[in-house]
Length: 301
Image (cartoon, rainbow, N blue to C red):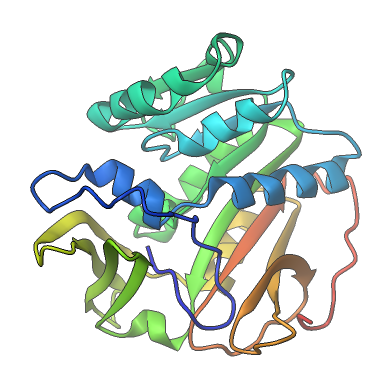
């Protein structure tokens, strides 16, 4: 996933030096993904605080769609004894990796409050319904490449939510998103992350993206993760969420670091208009029912 060094970036997880022992042959790609792409602590901080602000109470039941290793769902149940989660993904081996490496590291009580299901996110089953929160992070919903299929997914999410439920998505945009390019970032002194926008078709919006990892011995894990999806625009996503029946769709934009205007400050606020940054990551927050009117800023600060 893109983790830009420019303004408006979702913070990357602090990796430390855990990858010092790795080479391309010995590294575990799921561990590298969690180390380099995800920051579930900051993500759940935002989700938890925003839901509480909107509903006047903490959320309890969370469903993580396109869950992969269920890292976010595990972070959710770790927060409070009243929290429970369902993690839904079609790839059973990846879910099983998450069960072994994430779920089983929770205490016994927390393990009882999380369920991993290999299923289509559009038909999550009764256990994935009546939830407070649904997450679709890391732009995973872009796999639905037509308006009809994406709207259908959004409709299924709305049906899954409790009447007070809230849908959280992240979004990547800006002019750089439409380019065929590679970006390299050092995770620590032992691991380099490469985000590869390998192909982009401006007519269909279809994108081919890759993640590679490079190690101190010079070896490279090519195509550790591969994505075939559509680069949607932010107005399209907001329109489709409204068409799917969500009564209120807000964009939360990141503020600017006081010491470096090219960097974000990690604080996201609801805005009416954004900045024309070449690369940005923001959150989309969709209320099933608009139970609270949220005051929005004219532009991000």
